[in-house]
Amino acid sequence: MKIYIDADACPVVKIAEKIAKKHHIPAVLLCDTNHVLTSDYSEIKIIGAGADAVDFALISLCKKGDLVITQDYGVAAMALGKGAYCIHQSGKWYTNENIDGMLMERHMARKARNSSKKHHVKGPAKRTAEDDERFEESFERLLKDIKGLGNI
Image 1 (tube, rainbow, N blue to C red):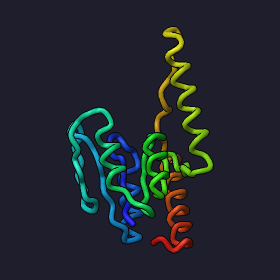
Image 2 (tube, rainbow, N blue to C red):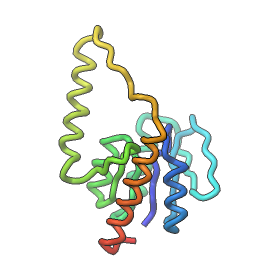
Image 3 (cartoon, rainbow, N blue to C red):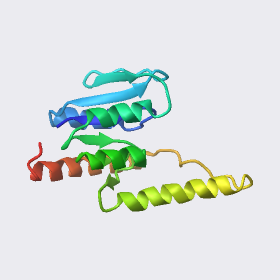
Image 4 (spheres, rainbow, N blue to C red):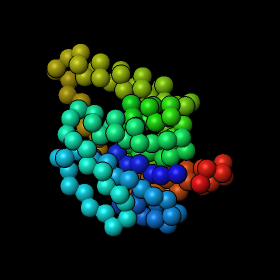
């Protein structure tokens, strides 16, 4: 098993690395050429800038049983299709049972944004320490579940 992190602007990289190191799981950070990452633990893969280049590189690398950290529902859907485990930076697990609904929500939100230029949709709220704690606890639970399945 490896942990692949869609690291472009990912706020949980350090938390994920700490947990990966604790469990002796190799981690790979993927980012485009517009970001500069350093790590004492993870392998860093810099992918050429381009629409979805990092996403496609991540999906080409991940295999069944790997774990992917991404906020992109599309990336999560493709990773699940390969048999990987997926978690959002909020701590929400992507599963085969919930991904269709999440993709539909994303589609509907995009339609709402595009339907009228008058309605401004605010971006996500500022990340808090509680958000980081929630991610850390959820990530640890996911790894425990995966271990229980014998995949680590």
